Amino acid sequence: MEADNEKTLQNDENNNPWYALNGDDGDVFFTSRVRIIRNLANFPFPLQFKADDRERVNAILLDVFSKVKNPDDYHVLPMEDLSSENYSVLQERGILKPMSEIKARHIPLPSTVVMNTKGDVSVLINQIDHLRLAAFKSGLDFTKPFSRVSELDAEFQNNVQFASSLEFGYLTSAMKDLGSGIKFSAWVNLQMTIRSGKLPELLEKLKTSPVELSPAFPELSRDNQVPAGCIFNIATCRSLKGSEVSQLADMEAVCSFIAEYERKISQEYADNHMTVIVNSVMRSLGIARNSLLLSLREAIDIIGDVHTGLRLGLVTGIDFGRLTGLLFRVQPAHLSYVMEEGNFDFEKDVRQEKILMIDRLRALAIQEAFENISLRKL
Image (cartoon, rainbow, N blue to C red; front, side, top):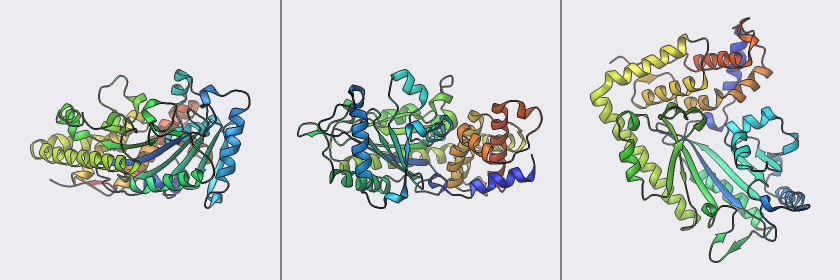
């Protein structure tokens, strides 16, 4: 690959989107998300729309959105104007559902996607529910994204009436979302909990908590019991009990417990198996530095290993924010976008297949990010 190719990738790295910034508890948690669901009164849910219901709800909500604070900070993207490539990028960012899930569950596409310029706040109109507000933050931090979606929610509440009842709170298409309509979720690295065989113990401790753990990258974990990079998505599974504030406090408490649990297990395991950990980190760095092609699963496993090594002080020359950014920057749709925007001179056999070009670009992206990494001498 030529020097111009490296410069293009480096410029992309320097844009510093929200997911590439250092966040609280970044040694265990990669990202946090808060989502609020609302439905207009006097309209059926999207799956029961008739006649012009879809167009009317879309028009009402977009009209309200034009009156929110700083509306010019947002981009309105009608679904019919969204290319399949752009859809895939938004899916990788956690804004849109995977197309495979939409087809399997017969879910309609949203009418409109609205995003702020930084990409850390999104609005979906007319998918399973009328309105879905979401905000994202690097590391473990629900307070700031909660504040942002709450502010948007309040502006909508001032202009439209949402469906609710005294008994069930806000009405939603799914029973689990009744009540506050809020959901908290985060990506967490549980590599040492898994490696030490303590995952069943952790799950038992979380049994009475209103959360569930699932692979952060389920499409890469179907044939492997260990999630890619040992990265899980932890999310609240119901929103009926308690207020939004109490649910926020409960989720913060659970995630703080998980962070301390993983740190404690990490230190205990390192005290007795340091050679095993160093071997994993060295092997991952070796694969990263000497590979011409990397699959998505390989890349995420490498990121997980280096993330754990950084937590234990074995690695220098990179920070947690950049590792979090890599989780998004090694995704195929993102790399496909970079490839179209850049001027890359791929090897002759590589440029014959798009998947090979993406694997080649992924290897280069990780090598650039790891350029200054060194392993601490034991």
